[in-house]
Image (cartoon, rainbow over all chains, first blue to last red):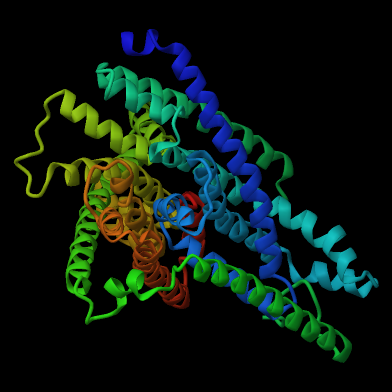
Length: 216
Length: 296
């Protein structure tokens, strides 16, 4: 057990670092995913095409390949950032495709009659989108968006494993590897750290789901 | 596309003109973006045959060796994914069926197991299996293949079998109650009913979700590269890139291989889903399965 008790401060800073990756990833992927989703439903064909290509390519590519590409490929063309920035960027790009699909599913789930009614009473495209469609679409998207975000929290461990340094995974790796602590207690500590992120996130999302659920 | 969206009407002449102008402008913007990227790549000499040659020019001296290594990596990836999905199917079905058949009290440890591995990042599970097996001297050497393969496969199996257990549970629960009731009424035990009546039907409706899970497993095998645990396609690619000093080109090819295979599998899942829903029934079960399967 000394692996955990002697290094509680390391675990705590690792936990905060991992939480940071999660939060940056969440904000970034929600913004980027919303942009791509708006491309995919837009009346402009080339934007739709771009959005579809983006989602198809990224959804079928492992996050690890994206990570390697960002971290080893981009420096080749003169873009040098820390592993932390590259890691979060890869996570944001990867998750954006899934966020986009969750939002699009929500928009498609709005019954056609809602939009038709909005047009029939003379609302413009912007008004019907802003006042009728999107509020319903967001509420329908909450459950799938929630599971996307939780999956992203778990994927943040991949970013850590990649060598960002200082996060929960790296702490566990260093303590069990270089410092020779017993693996079982240390890794149990790491696992508990991640459960402290994913389980409360799941509960919070379940609460939001109950609040915004639409009964059809 | 514009006909089946709820957002706008079938456009009239003015709207069509506006959309056309928008399409032209957006196309120009996308082309400009691609142009900037291409210029950047070109300025840094990333289009030179020196970097691409080993990958696309059969007369290049390294071409054959590079592709032989990539093929070896792909086989290693497929072996790991195949083993993981096969084992996950077996354990997942057993877990799911046992969870459905046992009393609520007996279910508690099972549910705990499922929820634990569902909530843990799979990369942690794999790392955990690896380090703890080594520490406790649990020997995987008698199994064929390198040790790293089995740590990876066992880690992936732990994660995916609980996912499959949940898929199976959703599938069985979405069957009409009459199925199990009829089986019990003709004198089957609950186990027999599960085995011969409910599970076969659940499997059929779960097929698209199970194929989608195969995509997830295939992507997750590349975690073996991040952990430096197992030499599969991505790690092979990375080794090649280090030797030839062409990470952009080699990783592009590796990514393309992954994307092609996974895209094929995703299409297959869609086709199977269409077939099943055309044969009637099962759409609610398919929807139920999609709720369980996590996005990534």
